[in-house]
Image (cartoon, rainbow, N blue to C red):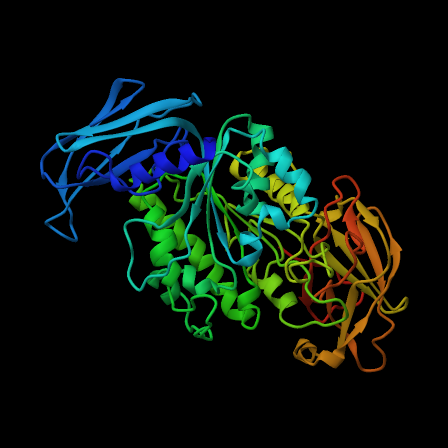
Length: 511
């Protein structure tokens, strides 16, 4: 009965119950609006230019505005207003009134609103996740998490309204089953910590490349674009989903976004290193502008570094794409990607996933790692460690035929599972590292608290150690069994590559 009522009310609100006063379809019962200090935006359409639109919260008027002519179509009226900043969670009843009608919304909460976007690993459903029956049963208790599903629609032009598969709803069996597992688990783990409502917007489409989620401005920010190959299963036209599944949300005030995508662009890592930060910066700029400054122009953006795929020693396009996801730095935030956070997933293979090995079912671990990043970057908990140790200096000892790597400027705390994963490039110059045959295995010889010494004896004669890389395979290890982790947080050392003609006894510091 509860489910039927939700559908009925949502359908009425979609068309506008009383007349021509209407709002985008992402306003509905059970919605979450962005909490203070930001102010939530309400907006919509009307026919009577100059008419007054008022908003009541629990029967008390809190704001009003005037209907203006649309800048794009002078025959259509547009109205837009900001609600007073609200820290109390609610629930509230909100009414929007004008001479043309009344729209009513019940059980409205104020919390943090997060956008969840990308391709199939973000679309991956709760019913598909590891231990799904338990996860679905457990989800029902989180009534302060509210979800909305964008429908699969593409467009050649930017749209003002979005198509909705399901309006705002709290977790209900039969509905939560179909929702993004990563999006929900991120919200769940975050809500446990914050103890106030979280609203999550699922707007994703499996198989899609980054180009379809990018506006023309973002696409033009990169020097060349390789046009994605056409597909009968998902759109590949430039901007097709930006227009239909992201642009309509721009006036909404949001807290941040999380993203799981990159598999579809793994053939062009150098281009992706430009496209990804360009898209992030463009989203931030446009959400900020269209929300009249209420969504931060630096809003936090979290993402998942590509997980493993096929078992074996294949290199393929995933390793350089993982590197490109960080703009060839290896970690975030960095100078090219401020206010971002990343969940490393390279140690989470699922070769027997019922959905195929490219879709690991272990979304719980990914969500937990993302939440650590959100707590630090989005919520200012600077003491929360959200990434594993990272190399900061390299020292070659030709006498011992070894390369010593220092992590976190000597403050790292390493735990070693095994001695695999490192390779050195044996060449006379770094240009020689472009030859796959130049890379040879370099097992760990010694592990210290914040250093490892790896075997560089594979470089003989006139060949020097001209580079080092770690976890440079499509699927470099078994589940949580890569070589190096932080001994306190159990977070993995991420994949990295460094090409340099390392000089004997010279310590090379990297930024």
